[in-house]
Length: 450
Image (tube, rainbow, N blue to C red; front, side):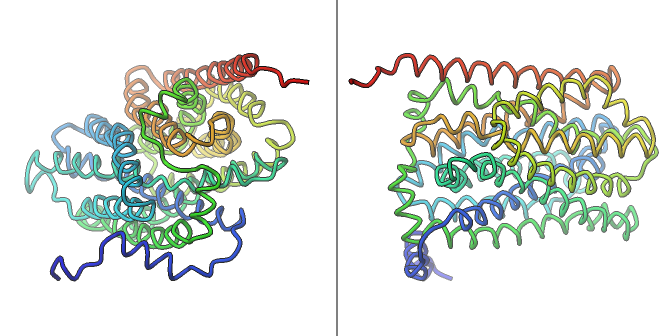
């Protein structure tokens, strides 16, 4: 098809807006649906790649490095997406300002889908040598840039439209995408690992989850576009001042809060990897357990995590989001002292570790983004929230599988517990700093005249 006959992203956005011009009153429930769909697609991509980093890439891309070395190299490439996300945010905010939110989202999700499906066609080391690792790194960077651009502002829009007494409940809604994405990704890999021979799985079976990820991205694109380009939503974004501001403007205005927001959820993110990516790598490398069995255990744990995320909304509205985050960070600190060793405790130990870990994760992760993001000014909330999310994933999650596997392989599982403890301490310190910053700001605000 020639370029002249291909519709532009601007015309596609106008057509979508015209198609839904009769869209009625916007309600928080509809925003929540869009948020869950978007987050589920992103987390599904995340877990498909993470699982492949353990059961596929060490053998396919890094066979020369051995099982542990190959997995560490896989996790190093895994981290590249988190390094690329802030750059993607800056790039796509510029696209948003020039061409609109619909164009930005379309390009970002097209890049995400293309980078993801490209991994499915990746040749192995035996076919093209070290170029396989280079291509994998390029595709992973593409995923990271796209994830930075996939920020659609719906989570912020949901937060500012939440009823005063239900903010904790609405804050946890975006986090539901994590356990849902993990359940679907784990189920797909467990199915192919269980039904195919090892040779067939390594040859072609592992590629199917990446094709599914591409299909889910397409569905998510249309679902999110249906929301963000409708006139009523566009008006709501404008009246709520949820418009993108340049990155340097947001950093200048909200720099301290962005920094605190990046570290406040470290306990959640450290726990996130301690019960998802890291234990799969440990069990796969250091025990006789099959990956299929442990993936099923992860699915069971994810169900408990989903229920805990829901519970976090109720508890946060009753006791406060900061209080819940502080209590769960203390719980994670206690958990770090003994729980990782349960991974060497056989079936019962693994199940106990995963269920208790996912419950703690759900309670903390469910409110991880709420307390600090709510303190951003509306004028800068869109960009500041995107940057905070990028930096939180980078510092809390990007290198977590790599660091946790390396230190535990060198010093044992107790070292992984120490890593988890450091995340809990960072969260407690960040929450205290956020409270002090809020108190300082309120003290500087002049009292109203009588």
